Image (cartoon, rainbow, N blue to C red):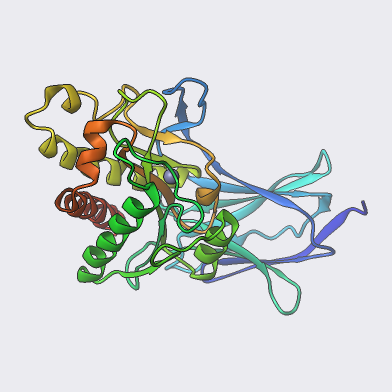
Length: 318
Ligand SMILES: [Zn+2]
């Protein structure tokens, strides 16, 4: 591979714009996080989202411009600097956030004049747009519940109700599927990217060979999605506490021992463009929980809880 030179770098509002010799691969790393091993074999659980900068490591790159970039005042990032230039054939562009933890994703693309644009998402203040992804559908029914119900039907019903709640609160919502149709995981990811979403929420219901398992979980992949997962999960746990108030066996299992907010590399949430979470509303394999999820009134409460979690996340990040 020929070595790459970054011949120019500038900042425009909330974007870094780079002129490269060729389209080298790069990776981004959000730093610094405190991680914990809260769940067996899952080593990337984020205790608290505390990133203060993001590193872009460009492969095959040994020459960069020497000027630092300064960003606009309304931008979520303050300045950038090059580090480790040419080290192991890579160079790192470190972009500092204006506020610790105030980070909501980025989009990278090549402009018409072939310059690399790395555009950072601003705080989700207005024009909120959410992509709701009801898991499974069509030829893929997902899990089959203890009473024979299909996960795909439970998921779409909850997602449609979440859509109503959010729209009533001024949020614009797009769905990766309406009705009982199939789309691949790639299509769902592409959909989220094309929609330029501020948030991506996949709605699923859980299943296990161990039918005694029950309760709710929320998953994230990117570290900056953890606060959204946590906000939605805590509201969902709240509604299950209400539903199981008179059933101490189920009540005690609503939140798993590790807290239920977990890192996991599910494909649909492996996007860098916005906070993305996958919600497991409850266990369809558990007969009691399956009956609860099969009840429309309960699904309405669950949908309201998801919506409340999203709105709380917005309010925390104003
Ligand atoms: Zn599922």
